[in-house]
Structure formats: C-alpha cells, structure tokens
Length: 258
Image (cartoon, rainbow, N blue to C red; front, side, top):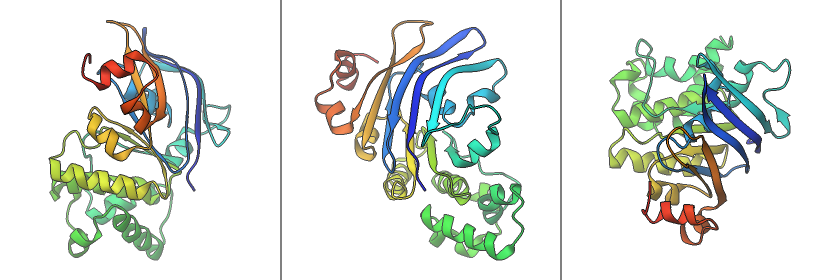
C-alpha cells in the first residue's frame, strides 16, 4: 500500500561538502511528485535520503528525519535493507543485471529475500512485467538476457524489478534522461498508471516532463558555487508552472536562469 512521506530538516553531506540544507516537505500518497531545479541543487541527493541510499557513499552523512506514514526510517534499530525494500528506486541509466535473464532480473529481489516457491516467483514476474507495460513484448523470450533489450525496454525491466517486491514508494532519478522520445513517452504513461498503486517521486531535468506527469512539483536551487541545495517551493504542479509564489521559481520556470 502506498505511503505518505514527511521530511523534516534534511541536510546531507559528502565528506565536508554540504549538498542539501534543511529540506522539509510532505509527499502525498498515490501522487507523483516531481523534483526540478538546476544541476547541483541537490535533487538526487535528497531523493536518495528517502531510502537511505545516501549512506552507502563513503564519507556521506545526513541529519533530519524521514517519516513514512509516521515511521522514522532512520530510527534506532531500523534495518536499511528493509527500508530499501519498502522504498524502491529506479536509476538514471537502465541497469539490468547483465548475467541474468529477463525473468531472473524481475525476481532478483524476491529471491534475495529467500523466496523459492516457483509459482509465487512466476506470478510476481508476470504481474510486475504487466504493470511495467513490458509483458506483451517479452513473454516469448523470458530466458534471454535482460541486457539484450532496447534501452527503453531495459528501463521498464528495471521498473518491473523494483515493483516486484511490492514497495510502498517508488523513487525515480531521471529515469528518461538516457532514452529516446518514444521510450520516454512510454515511461511517462507508465508513471501515470503506477501512481494508482505507489507513491512516486521523480527527479527530472525536463520541465515539460514534470508538467506532464506530476501532481506536485518541488523546486530546488543553489545560491552559488559550493552552496548547499535548498528547497524553495512545493505546490500543485499547475500552480508551480503558472503562478509560483517565489520569484526564483518563476525565473527558473521561464528560463531566465538555470
């Protein structure tokens, strides 16, 4: 079941560099929230704090709270692996496991959790491929390597892999930046379908994409070289793109900076 995310005072560092500062926002259930802003404004860093991926980088650390339906994912004794199961992630470039078949790629997370029942694995694989809009294209070649698919198909395969473990939140870090326009539109259509089952956060450099796919938009910016990224404004996408509250948001949306 999709979950609501609340962050409070999130700051994150890579060694001595503060990447983001004091980010507090709420991401609503069964909505798509887009994160936009210039390069270096901390969008990807912030999204990685939402499933504790930030901490896998040597020398990285964070402060603040991330609550998923009130549950503190950084609380004492919380297993980061459990967090990443509940908060799935799709990365910028498609990354299917090259030595695994299409079927094995989709069920990799379940098998890692110890699921061995073939019927359950088969059901999860087909369900996830159907949800990712890929089943009809690959049903007859499930034993072929995932890396043999086209770029757009590989990204949908990675989405199928992420949702096979039935997460509550799906994070997408520029999922279309390496794809052609046709594949990009397919992913956007898929995002719109998936929000019925998941809370989705998407980082995108493409403002037209944010306007097309998201319900809410958060604008991040950075005030100068070496400064941390900050959240400037969060609101309904239609408002952010037509009548933002902050002049910096308007300047970015209209192309006057960034």
